[in-house]
Image (cartoon, rainbow over all chains, first blue to last red; front, side):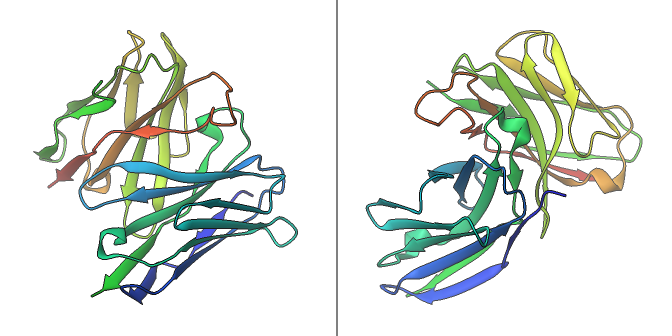
Length: 112
Length: 117
């Protein structure tokens, strides 16, 4: 079956790098996403990667995809207190959002 | 451009009561979704719609009904609320257009926190 797994918590010090990991099971996934949820708000798309890519960089964010191991990671460089949030990994077959499977989310705590 | 809005933001119900959650989007999106978010379980899809007048069941549809009479609105109904339906409900929408690989990017509302006593 389809499943997306993430660790539930991560704590880092301000200025350090954060790495949030995700594993998924569906090898036919076309797109993989990272969404961010701030307290009291809905999810917002942070970044995404197409399944034929290994890496994508966007300012402080680096997404790495290991398709063989079905492993996705999000690295946040120079983590700030404003990065404290829940980060959701999601996989999609690209046939409509109703085919998107979300992980349980990783809560990132940034200590000053 | 308000994006996706949800009303109400908070609601407390007694077991057996009914209510309707309203979602509205102003992005002319074809697809709309209702999710529930529970601690440690991420988002679970309740129902979705691929266009005006159409709805379909998601992963956890029992106890909920939906309607999409207008393209911009998607309503979620609880006919007889149960404590197990205590959750945070999110509405989302996405475009059916496949441009730059972003066709499945979903835009979320701020959520409705529902407590059923």
